[in-house]
Amino acid sequence: MSSPLFRPAMDRRAFLTASTMGLASLGFKGGVRASTGPAVAAPTLAKPAKSTVLFFLCGGSSHIDMWDMKPDAPLEYRGEFKPIRTTGDDIRLCEHLPLLAKQAHRFSMIHGVTDGGRATGDHHAGYYYNLTGHAPDPTFKQQGNDRRPYPDDWPYMGSVIGMKRPQHPSLPSLITLPHKPSKLPFTRPGQFAGRIGMEYDPFFLNGRFEEPLKFAAPTISVGGGMTASRMQDRKALLAAMNDARRELDHEVAIQNYVKQQERAFDLLSSSGTANAFDIESEPLKLRERYGQDINGMSLLMARRLVEAGVPFITVFWMGDESLAKKCRSAGSWDTHGNNFNCLRENLLPQFDRCFSAFLEDLSSRGLLDETLVMVTSEMGRMPKVGDRRSGGVVGAGRDHWTACMSVLMAGAGIRGGQAVGETDARAELPKDRPIYPEDVTKTVYYAMGIGDLEAHDKLGRAYNLLDEGRPLTELF
Image 1 (cartoon, helix red, strand yellow):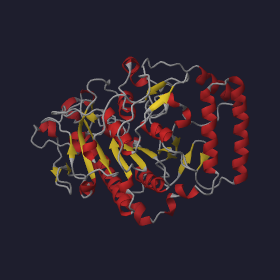
Image 2: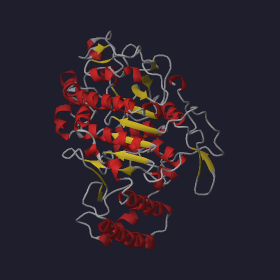
Image 3: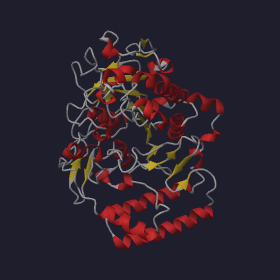
Image 4: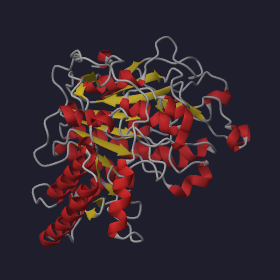
């Protein structure tokens, strides 16, 4: 899990000791069991996608207010927004997504995605289930949002694809931007490689609200100012530090950490890959179409990485902390209070602009057919308005709701304009056919041509990376 090498208040020796001891003390606390024995090959798409872009709406986006609207439900459920027609026959969207409505023929909606009562209702469990396809183990119920990522966690779907697909010749196979949810010490589980090894962890590109055109890797800027000689000097320093760490601990995790650092330096010191990160070279008109904010520029970066052939790119929506008081949240989609004003005035316009631009851009460049695009979140929102934590009905918020959410998928041969799955009259529960996160994860593997889900533990024993679920082949 990439992090700054040392902080100003910590000297190098203290860092070496503290960080190594921290890794050495990590135990296998998940208490989950993998199925043993060879994994049976699963079906895959005849022409697999070359890349996947997963756009994760951090906080828990409101399915009933965005794309699973219930205009005939009582007012306290349907809320303030009206549905509008789209270019997709089976898709109705919120009136505050007019640009995306014009792209509906390019994507499908999956409704009624549910945890089946196996999650805990908090963010950590929601991330874990929807990013790995594995139901949260008992530690999530015991620890809630204090539950840290463990080294024996089930791997993020992007890490599995990074392990199973051929390695990119010059770029990482899995890149995550513009941040790593959430702020320490509450790092969300599920976004890392876990038991398959840190070498399959994401390569992180960090972005900032103040400078949305500039992205940086931990400790090293992706932009200008890093000369070849400075790069080599810093590489020599890291080599010395890693030598010291190896003297303290020879665990495989440390070796994987070194591999990640080496790849980072090789990547950032290579003139051949520099252009993939150069957002400022994009035409101003296109940048403005996406919206020159951190989320828009992150999707534009994702498009560039698709062009460069990166197999898996994750964009985690970065919340605006200035909205925290207004929305009773951390500034993202966790609208515990003032749900309708926060969506109408802030979240929906920004999402509508950047995501519709992303689909339009991929399509115009002939990239959509070979790229799987997915929009998901850790949960939906409570269909009945009035979160008790923000004053009930007066607070006009929606609480967490893991019993139902929606997922958007596009590209990679998916038939646009359709809806798979359905919820009841109030968007509270799946109507007839529940769809689970493991089904969604298996669909990603199907689209990316990953039929072999066999892995091996440290003793060489085979196990299956995802036993449960089936791909939603009817989407394609």
